[in-house]
Image (cartoon, rainbow, N blue to C red):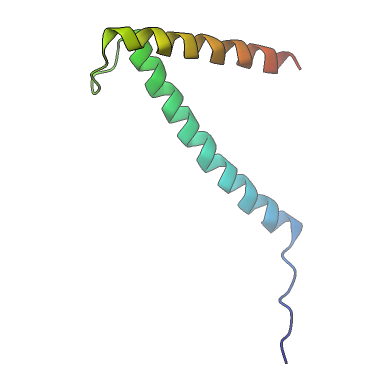
Length: 73
């Protein structure tokens, strides 16, 4: 007869959840950093046409505005 597994403790569940979220945060941070370097023209490893830099700068500006609004709450 099948027996249910033991329940995972809340702390173990929290640790796994935070680890999973941390990986996503790290990836997002790298992507943002790359976008920022592309927008400022400091990137050494990517070739970006000049007209697309305007789009990157607008994205960076919006991101900074969102962060500013989020820190006030």
